Each structure stands twice: as C-alpha cells, then as structure tokens.
Amino acid sequence: MSRIGRLPVPVPESVQVEIKGSHVRVKGPKGELAHTFPAAMKITYKPEEKVITVERPSDERQHRAWHGMTRALINNMVVGVSQGFEKVLEIHGVGYRAEMKGKDLVLHVGFSHPVPVPPPEGIEFEVDTKSRPMRIIVRGYDKQRVGQVAADIRKVRPPEPYKGKGIRYAGEAVRRKAGKAGKV
Image (cartoon, rainbow, N blue to C red; front, side):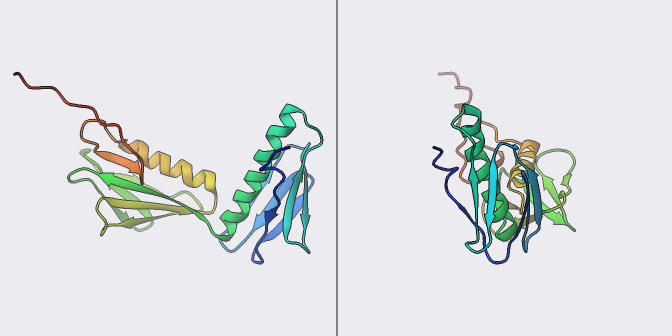
C-alpha cells in the first residue's frame, strides 16, 4: 500500500472542503482551488475529524500510482489555501538587479532593455534589495503555478557556467567551468 496515499490530509479550521465524486474544491483565506481527480479514487471528507482520506479500489499498478499522487495534490491544495507557497530566486552578476513597478517585476539582467514580468492571477512578487545577492520572492496559493512562474523568471537569464551570472533558485548549486587557459 502507498505510504503517502494512506496518510489522512489534515484540514485546518479556516479551510472549507467540498467533494462531489472525484471533483474536490478547497477554499481558504488565501484563495480557492478546484481539481478533478481520477474517478477510480475514493475521496472522503470527515468534517468531525477534519481530515480527507483517499482510498484506491485495487492494487493495480495505475491505481497505486494515482493513490499517492491524489493525496499529495489534495494536501498541496489544502496547504496552499491556508498557508501559501513561495519560491526564492537569487540574482547574481554585476549590475544585475530587479525592481517592482506597481505589481509587475522588472528585471535588469544584462540585456539592452528591461524585462517586465507581469504576475498571473494568484501570484505576487517581492524584491529584497537589501540582501546580497538580490532576492526575488514568488508567492501564491497554487504550488504548481508558483513553481512555473519561478521557472519562467529563471529562464529569462539562467546562470551561466563560467562566472555564475544569472538568475538561480536560492540554494541552487551552479557547476562552474574553467575558462580558457593562458599561454605558458
């Protein structure tokens, strides 16, 4: 049996859960998320215990895979609408910086023009200019969207292997290469 799938998902007091068959809607202080899961999974909400459980119909390979995935996605929905998620990016490089213009993030990362990044719905940006290297914080209640927006920002100027300049995730290790060797 799936060790992740059999764990119950705790639901905080501030979160409302609505389950109709395989469609789950979760609403909390940060926002509202809905998702339709595979129909084979049996999803039940016990309001008196404040937990959501996921059961699978058989030990078939596909059902085992869906079991853990369904439970993990439901947990991410509950955590997202109650606490939210964030990804931290760092900007490395001389003259590389980021700033906020209204709600938009504007990146100055070595191009001849600034690169504006408008936030999608449910996402907000924060720039920490006091830290070195400069940090960009991407926050939201949908874990998948937060990760995708952070990846899109990193894609503007990924870290290069010679000097390490570019945008990278906090804690990401960039493999450095040796440059050209001079004449001896």
